[in-house]
Length: 170
Ligand code: ZN
Image 1 (cartoon, rainbow, N blue to C red):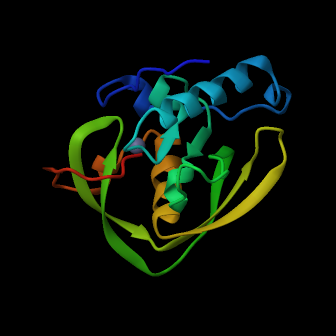
Image 2 (cartoon, protein in one colour):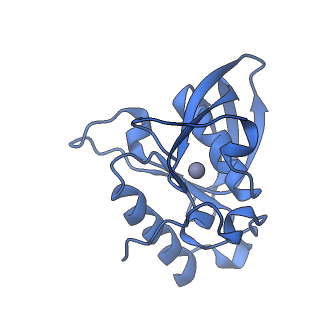
Image 3 (cartoon, rainbow, N blue to C red):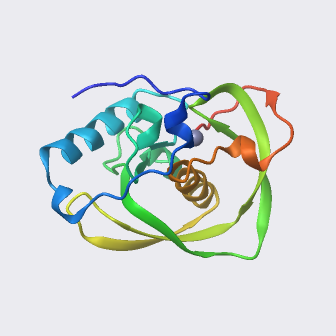
């Protein structure tokens, strides 16, 4: 398929509330192509661990988490996690101040308070519902990506940003 250009902050698509994927869209050519393009685009970013559809200009409630987020090495067979119409079912009371970056906010990082654990409910590419209990980096990505689908950037959660080299961007 295709590696897409990642939309940068300032583009209105990043500020829109993304549309839910309708039941009849599952397994459609369009959704399959969207997900493949997202996978190709994220896999091409060495520093990216998550990507939401609006980041490639498509205002749909879809995000993917890179297998890199689970710390798997190149030769393992784990795949990226595809989440469609995701909702956060539960957040832990405990939280941590984490340094975040975003593929749509190149070169900047900021500290954001995120729950340490997050349970997500979503649909997979075939339209099957699932829940996933994420902790640490995965929980952080869930919260960051669901924000993207509501037109929220991590910048909205912090007053200060800084330039740094950091290995994870979403
Ligand atoms: Zn992001």
